[in-house]
Length: 136
Image 1 (tube, rainbow, N blue to C red):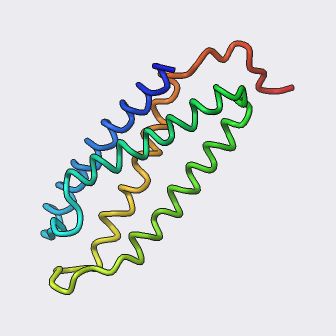
Image 2: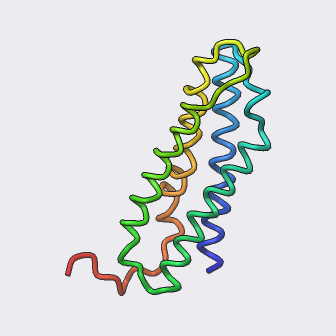
Image 3: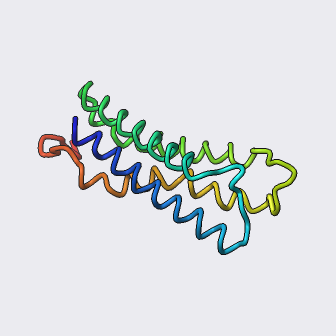
């Protein structure tokens, strides 16, 4: 159990760092500022929250002994990450924001980074898979 939640916290922290770095690079490279809409605190909170939700879902799979549905859960997480992109595409920005057409380029990757990081570091936190048959 500790391993699963440490996985979620680690993925959340790493994805928050990546998202903040991306925010700074994006805004510097394009000369824009979306500080009125997106701030570092909300990025960190959303990254930690998303990764902890993924971690809780992994924990529930183990608790109810449904490890064989891990692939399906991963598909659901990926699908929800893509569905969450729609919120940033339909978000109406304040009228005083310069270059509002650049906002999706900032927010879309931030919706995908937490799931990507969670899946990328998952092998380091994998539970004992010795008694799970991959092909039956």
